[in-house]
Amino acid sequence: MNRLDFLKNLGLLSAGATILPKYLSSFARTQFTELRNGVGIFSMQGGTIGWFTTDGAIVAVDSQFPDPARAFVDGISNFGTGPEKVLFNSHHHGDHTGGNLIFENDGYKIIAHANVPGLQRTAAQNNDNEDAQAYATTTFDDQFSFDAGDETITAKYYGAAHTKGDSVIWFENANIAHMGDLVFNRLYPFIDRNGGAMISGWINLLETVAGEADSETLFIFGHGNPEFGVTGSREELLHKRDFLSHLLEYTRDGIAAGMSREELTSRTSFDQFPDIISPSDFLSLPRNIDVAWLELTES
Ligand SMILES: [Zn+2]
Image (tube, rainbow, N blue to C red; front, side, top):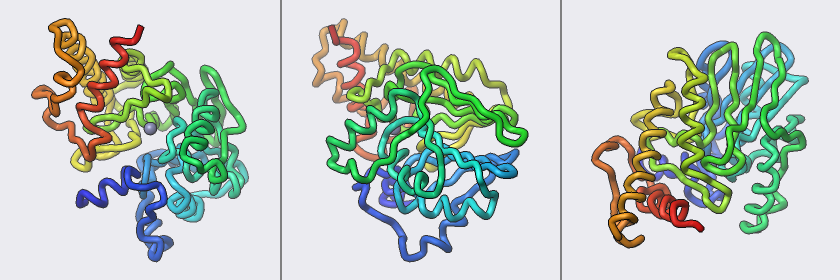
């Protein structure tokens, strides 16, 4: 994948930038990958969609953007059909909710943590695209669970992390969990301070979720370094935890040593984490350090 395609996949170019609309229907089918037990992933542009199908039900996690959402709702019929259709939003960011309207019009019920609709509405007002939104109509504070076929699907909230509305969606029998953007796999993460992010909470969350998993648990990640992909084991959660811990430690030590915000944010990599790449200035170590600085110096 070249750099431009990579950025487009991350959804970091303009949200209006559509890729390959001409070949959409034929290309879309190749974007579905089954993992196991009826659970799979779909990648086209934006945060990885997770899916599960069983007799009479389709469950999706995240909606990317309108074009991929259209390709998804059309293509998933090759794997299963409703009438029960459920879409979870792992959090409010536009590359995970931008296709909600397509799902809603296709009969999906949208579920998310209670903080998600408000965050999504504020972001839409700031981006002047409120017309393009559809919001979760079912929300939860701590946890939401239901059965579909042989599977039990549970969405859990662990507190503020990447935003203040992230949930992890567990497919319990398949032993697969969708992490949303709680893991940018070997990428510098986006830490959405305006959306209520908390690095210290994120570290605790990753530790807790890794502790709830076992060596067979498969995780789906919102975004990934192409070399490492968008699925992985709990080791990747612990790797991200270690990175975030180091980020806070570096920043705390620098502040204590009298380094300025500018000096601290001139650092572009940590020797201990050579695999973490920066696909754009938006996802970079200086940005991460700046958020850490704000978190540590807030009164
Ligand atoms: Zn995000």
